[in-house]
Amino acid sequence: MTDPPAASIYRREGDHRLIEIRLHEVRQLFHTLDPAPFREKDLDTDAEEYLTEACREAGAHRALRLVIHLPAAEAASQAARTLPDAIHHYFDYRARQQRADRLRLLRRGLASLAIGTLFLVACLGLRRLLLLSDLNIDRALVGEGLLIVGWVAMWRPLEILLYDWWPLARRERLLRRLATIPIEVRSAGP
Image (cartoon, rainbow, N blue to C red; front, top):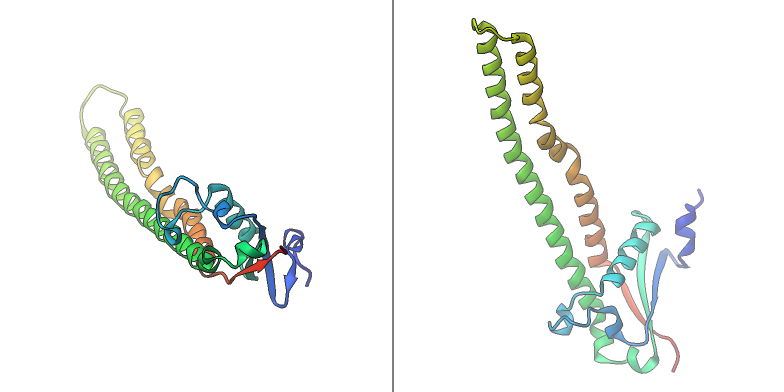
């Protein structure tokens, strides 16, 4: 079996596909305005996007390793030694945030489903009353309108519960993968 074309752009070392980053300084990887201690700093937005896209492109079932190339002096620094922990910590934090967002969406979907169901029942009840009444209106037209409006109220809750949470779950898996990816800091010369 051959690799998909997108996976072939990543070098292979043993069983791993390599996601490689070349930097002049460790701090290039992190958001410069973040005042948090180094291990808790946020990754730069471009760095996060690059890593998540590279992980996605390389394939969900491929063994990956992140290799960060730094000048020799920078590779020997304390910041470089704690770099794997900082990256893992960041992606673990983002995965927890993503999980919270997914659970919040599902709770909203369930609450919306309860409200939509009550509204549908009210519309069906009103429709039944209308069809049995002696009112001088086009009962069929109003009755069908109530039926349609009741079902339309169910559209968004069902969309949330059937479809909207899948992309959030996929992203959470991707972030969890990056939270545990093997990371190696390599010296890139003097």
